[in-house]
Length: 392
Ligand SMILES: Nc1nc2c(ncn2[C@@H]2O[C@H](COP(=O)(O)OP(=O)(O)OP(=O)(O)O)[C@@H](O)[C@H]2O)c(=O)[nH]1
Ligand SMILES: [Mg+2]
Ligand SMILES: [Zn+2]
Image (cartoon, rainbow, N blue to C red; front, side, top):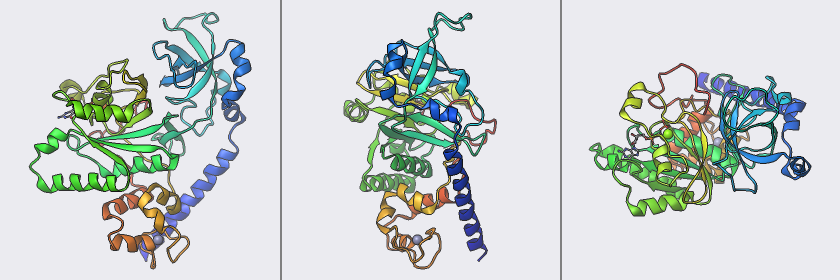
């Protein structure tokens, strides 16, 4: 009974917060609305000398952008230092940064206006942002009612985990899958450090890994088990990796040390990525410090991001969350109670499917974890409470 009461309270809370969020969205400041302008309306400004660009890196007070003369051709070698137009620099916004890596923006050069040159790079002002075709975001760890957009306009989400060192966190994978499902993005799973699994003598762990990889494949996700670092990656594995990333704009996400940058380095990146070394490991910090938009020699672009420390995603109602678990969908609307949370209600179709073995228990546990707001703090940085780096 006490548990039921707690759950009811919790769900009412989610609904209340969502109402506030929607109301806020509705009354978003006019500056926020004006900032997002469809590209079709950019032509007149482009004639005045403005230029379209892609955001390639975001810092606290500035960002780097690269011109994008046509869609999907980003001149990543031509980097401009940009600041946001002053009129948009308001604090009362729901989004941590108005621009994120991957955003398409319209810039005005102020190369000859600036009295002070802060950098040798040309300088510009970001005047407008195009509506996003996709975004991946989390809850800002510093202000829990604010959204932190990690990347925008990606064409696929590549979730990277390592079998060991650090040990794979299946719950984190499921959290990312929920975001991908909601955005209608293809999600691909790369399980790295296959060599460590091969040498592992914990048979039950190896068995679980095998089972779960096969289960994700059964659910229709592409799963790749690779060895991105260490000795040379075999040609076949390399070809498989290329086939995933070629001509896409991919976001690489996952926790620190799993091998995201090692993967990027296999694909002839324009900028070689720094990979974790013994020294960095001792300091316990992220190797990649900022998410950056990188052109790949094999074709396409990738956003390499630092391993995430806290991955709290926006709270969702049970109905919203079931969308993120594709195997739950056939049972949605079949429960006895319309507002079923699928936790312990009688006549719950999802619980029955778990009992009957149609939904796996561990995926169901992930659902419960997200629904009840487990923090998602995982990994070797979990004891560090020093706030978050400015980037992702
Ligand atoms: N044994 C083994 N080690 C690997 C493999 N891939 C990468 N590594 C090592 O794992 C460590 C972490 O790799 P990174 O590529 O820096 O990981 P990352 O995900 O980019 O980490 P952050 O930038 O901190 O988020 C490095 O020491 C790599 O050499 C692999 O397949 N097997
Ligand atoms: Mg890295
Ligand atoms: Zn139910």
